[in-house]
Amino acid sequence: MSLKHALLGFLSYAPMTGYDLKRYFDQSIHHFWNANLSQIYPTLSRMVEEGLLTMEVEHQEDRPNRKVYTITGVGREELQRWLREPLGLSPLRVPFLIQIFFGGSLEKEEMLARLRHHLALHQERLAAYQGPVREVLRQNVEATGLEREGFFWGLTLDAGIQCEEGWLKWCEEAIEKIEAMGDGHDE
Amino acid sequence: MSLKHALLGFLSYAPMTGYDLKRYFDQSIHHFWNANLSQIYPTLSRMVEEGLLTMEVEHQEDRPNRKVYTITGVGREELQRWLREPLGLSPLRVPFLIQIFFGGSLEKEEMLARLRHHLALHQERLAAYQGPVREVLRQNVEATGLEREGFFWGLTLDAGIQCEEGWLKWCEEAIEKIEAMGDGHDE
DNA sequence: CGAACCATGTAATAGGTTACATGATTGT
DNA sequence: ACAATCATGTAACCTATTACATGGTTCG
Image 1 (spheres, chains in turn brown, cyan, red, purple):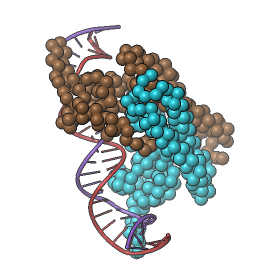
Image 2 (cartoon, helix red, strand yellow; image 1 turned 60 degrees about the vertical axis):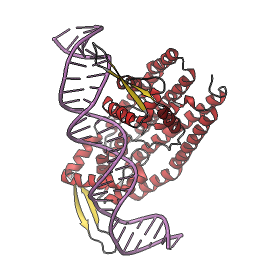
Image 3 (cartoon, helix red, strand yellow; image 1 turned 90 degrees about the horizontal axis):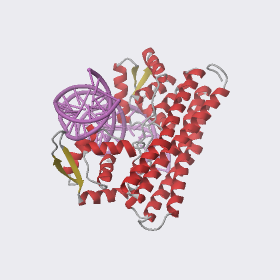
Image 4 (cartoon, chains in turn brown, cyan, purple, blue; image 1 turned 135 degrees about the vertical axis):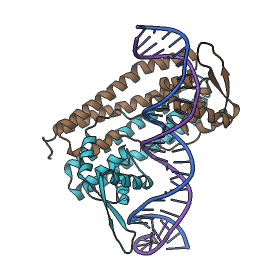
């Protein structure tokens, strides 16, 4: 279960609440993994039962109480074990490609509009990765001083960028090929 | 629900059994979507209830009976509607990148071994796409005569290839960067 | 005055994987 | 003999999403 190990990973940096963890997800691994609060909270409870974490309630007066989770020795061992576990390639699930696969009945212009829209979405995402996302990463390295860790954070962002560039290239080539095609439903 | 629409897509080519459909999944859209028989069978039943398909039992003597599903007019309309529905970008879920992200505690050689293994997996998959997978696609076009459809089938395979090439490039660059790094856990 | 932030959850639903169950035929 | 192919499913389980529920504070 990857969510569990991602939580262990962040908690190996510092004790945190579920709400904090969600912010870290959104800020740093959002481009290859995400989780909702409604999934994070029960998972943290279960991890306490399993002995991977401990929890302490921090009382606050003007705000809701915080449940601060801390990783245990067992938790650290489990994280280290998992980090070395060989994983196969994760299967893709891209509904958009199902639409392309069965798109033979769409008209040329309709299909082009779909692809151009998709291209724009990927351009947006790429720009975000190269700009604000990269910047947040840099700030996190600066704030924590975790140089070596920051190097690996950067690698995952590189992967996201590489992926987006691949999609852009594919979209562009697909558009060219369709534009070169005959009109209507034939050829 | 994408599975439903993928099933509608294949059944728009010809009536088929669940078992046949599974074969088509494995053969043609496997690289961006897959499904198990234990998921396909109940889904087909539900689609009959919803009026998207009809089912007829074909009795066989030496083999189990076949349940042949046929797409209805309603089913075709639903497929056409869905093919035009704009979809956002599908979120990635790559557990391997979680391992990289939190991989700061692994030793240099350990990390290199992981990346080299990953590189090999992607090379294998790319070779499959460029060789046998492309060949099966070509044969399906020849067998069915669906030239225009075949063009779009090919596009989805191009996307798979583009994706694999992106991963390969990323793996290679990551390996180079790590090799250039200082030894052990520092720097 | 309304939106966003802080902070916690539960419940219902959907989607997907794995294991279990059956049973004849064909190929190695 | 053993595995694979044909052909159907059910049940248990795991994972993830969406909706519902609460309630004060801060910012525009």
